[in-house]
Amino acid sequence: MKQDLISDVVVKRDLTSDVATKRKLIFEKSKDGHHGYSLPQLDVPERAIGELLPKNILRDIDPQLPQVDELTVVRHYTRLSQMNHSVDTGFYPLGSCTMKYNPKVNEKVARLEGFVHLHPYQPEEEVQGALEVIYTLERLLAEITGMYRGTLQPAAGAHGELTGMLIIKAHQMKKGEKRTKVLVPDSAHGTNLATAKMCGYSVVELKSNPKGQVDLKLLEEALDKDVAVFMLTNPNTLGLFEENVIRISEMVHRVGGLLYLDGANMNAIMGYARPRDMGFDVVHLNLHKTFSTPHGGGGPGAGPILVTEELEPYLPVPVAERRGGHYTLDYDRPLSIGRVKAFYGNFNVFVKALAYILAMGAEGLKQASFDAVLNANYLKEKLKKSYYLPYDFPCMHEFVLSGEWQAKKGVKTLDIAKRLMDFGFHPPTVYFPLIVKEALMIEPTETESKDTLDAFAEAMIKIAQEADLTPEVVQSAPTTTPIGRPDEVRAARNPVLRWKPEER
Ligand SMILES: *Cc1c(COP(=O)(O)O)cnc(C)c1O
Image 1 (tube, rainbow, N blue to C red):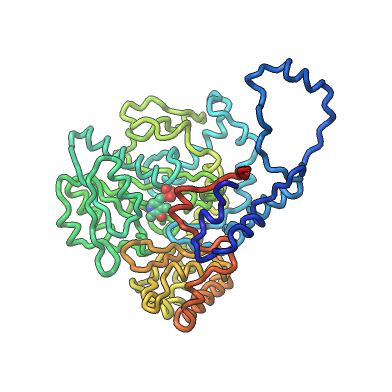
Image 2 (cartoon, rainbow, N blue to C red):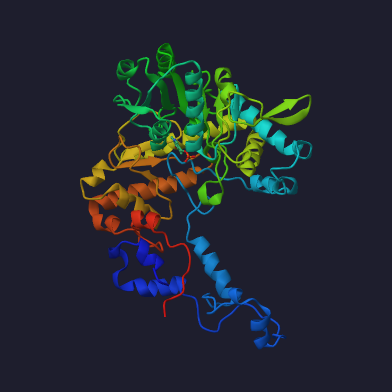
């Protein structure tokens, strides 16, 4: 291997002398002469091949492939797959990301033949079932959010933000308004600021008040006729419900601005509160957070948006419609912002989300939110004696601790996160939201049992004790994982994703 994977991502202190051996053990499986196939004897004279085949397609040198037998290949990949932490192998309390359990029945439904063999260019009459999935899911999400219509096209939350903001922009331009500013609280997810910038707005950041909420006085000062949108997250990224959301909505609308909901935290309020009733004009949902579909490597995401009646004409084309018992795709929408995704979005994700919503039912979704909030508050109360809790209020589905007490002893939040891995837990989100120093953002989700929450709390409390008594143990963690402290920038910028032959 030219660039060795391990030394490429691991910080020096972890490995020093041992890299080469470690790398050899884990990745260098090739041995000259080993192979996992048996081909019949060549029955063409070798000389003839050179004459029969055009010269330009003949190789000069043999392909540089690893030489391995079948079992070695199977074991190699199986072992690599087991090096990853996942929702299916352990507790994954990654705040803001909502690593919910992915029900296996969803996968089964999404793999039904009728779904997997669809082609996007099939005529409408042949794909009535698929259109029904799209239409029904959109209607259910509209029901859950209290909104009028929506689109499932965006591939992620951030993409939903962009779509929603382009819709608002199109609407305001149609009215002849030239609004230039977008307001964002200082607790917001980075994608909100990026979205506003991408849409050509200048961003005004609002400092949160000591309760972690929107400061109404600062909001009042920031509001004027240039404000296009206030992008708000509710529950916000501190896991707190914005108590004044109705007031906020009135204030923003009074100056002619619109209110955008970053609905990434909808899993805390399903069935209890509806974005439309809170005064929002647009909301995005993350099906891979709230509606149990897998994240990232587990499959693509989806970030549907839902809008009010006023904004409906601007939705991307096509919009699925039901006319006289027949499903159809409507492209005839003159005010539409156009397409935001090839074809109709990540269709198989819709199937999984729909399967989840139908399996849960209205009461089940409500129960999921209730349990998510209960689990978070339970853990928060268990941990707040050992870790500083800067916003000590009843939380929603997640809460944010600070590692400040431990930092005074030289143990950073990153060290705490690394040490948790030795106990078999995925660390919480760290250093976000930015307004909490040494932040540890914990989201247990609704499906975890009391036993798991207790075991996690026990590990966290033990780490707090270690930070007091034996800080070096925490500082040198993890010791049980194949890779310890990756240089995250190098790992992200120069990932080594495939085996390369050793240079001879
Ligand atoms: C996850 C998240 C986003 C972005 O969603 P993606 O699906 O990752 O693009 C935006 N805002 C908040 C609050 C989030 O938690």
